[in-house]
Image 1 (tube, rainbow, N blue to C red):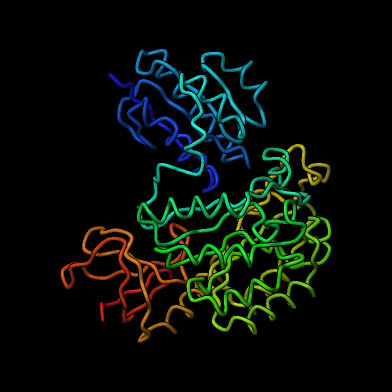
Image 2 (cartoon, rainbow, N blue to C red):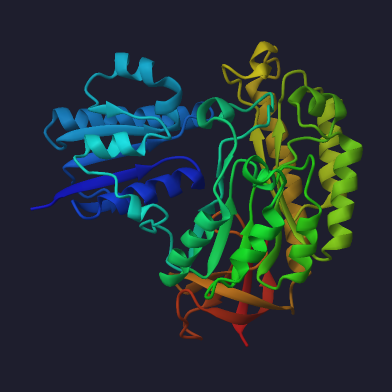
Length: 428
C-alpha cells in the first residue's frame, strides 16, 4: 500500500509553488495531503525563514512533528524551504530527530530521501492546492536587489529567470487543468528576463501568456518600483486579459530612509512613477506594502509616510513592522524604535487605510463588476473582481439563497452595498 505523506507549507505563495511541484513528483508513490490534520506516515515541512514570527512558526511546527514522531504518530520528518536553507547546520545540530534538512533548490535531494526518482518529464507540472480556477505562476527565482532589510537574496540566491518557453509550457498545463486566473509572482517581477535575454522582458512575457487558451485574468505581483519597465503599462492598458491591478511594494516615502533601505528610488521618483501609472492606466488599482519602525525612523519621518498614504489613497495596503534580520546590511544599524512604537505606527496607518478603503468601496456602489466565484461560505458565495487578489484583498459577497452559482465561473455583479473590506452585490 502507498504511504501517506503530508506536505505542510508555511510562508509565501512562492513556497506554495515549490510544494506543488514536489507533490506532483510524489503522486505515483504516495497518497498526498497538503496542510492536513489527517494522520500520515511521512511529514514534509516547507518552512519560511524571512522574519522572526515566520521563523518561530516554522520551528514550532518542526518541534511538534518531532514530538509526534517520538510518540509513534509519524515514521519520518523532513524539513525543506527557506528556514532550512538559511540555518541548516544549526537545525541539524539542535534537532537531530529530523530525518533530513534540505534547502530551497534541493528538489532532487528531497526526492531521493523519499525514495523517488526525479521525473524530468514532469517539470513544469504541479499538483494545484489552490481552488482549481486560479494558480500562482513563479516566473523567476531569487533577487539581485540589495535592500538593506531583506534576507531573501541570502536565502534564495541571485535572480534567475525561467525561459519564456518553460513558462508558457507551464501555463498550458495549468490552463488544461482548469486554471483561468494566473497570479504572476517573483521576488522582483519587473526584473524578469534581464539575466537570459539581456533586457527586461516582462511585457512580452505577459502578452505571450495571454495568448494561451483558457487564461482570462493575469494579475501582477511584486513589481519593484526602481527602473520600472514602462512598457508594462501599455500592456496593462491594451491587453484585456491583464487585470488593472499592480502590486508594487514601496516600503517608505522618506528620502533618508529609502536611501538607507537601498531602494534605488526616493520620494520624487516614487511620486513620478505613481503619477505615470495613473495617467497610462486610468483606474488601475495599486497594492503596496510599507515598513514602519525602520532603524532611526523619527516621528516626523513616520508622519511623512502617514501623509503620503492619506494623499495617494492606495486601494490596497499592507504594513509590516521592521524586523532586525542578521546578515542584512540594516542589521548593522541600531534597532532603536521600540516594539510598542512600531505597533502603534502600524495601527495608525491601518486605521487610516481602513477609512480609505471604505471611501473607495463606497464609490463602487451601483457599479457592475466582472466577478469570479472562489467558494461558498455560509449564506454567501464569495467572489473577487479584477481589482482583488486572493486572500489579501476585498471580496464580493452574494447571497446564496438568491442565486445558484458555479465555483470558478465569471459573473456580472451589481454592487449594492460596501463596507471597509467587502462588497455586497447581486447577479445581473
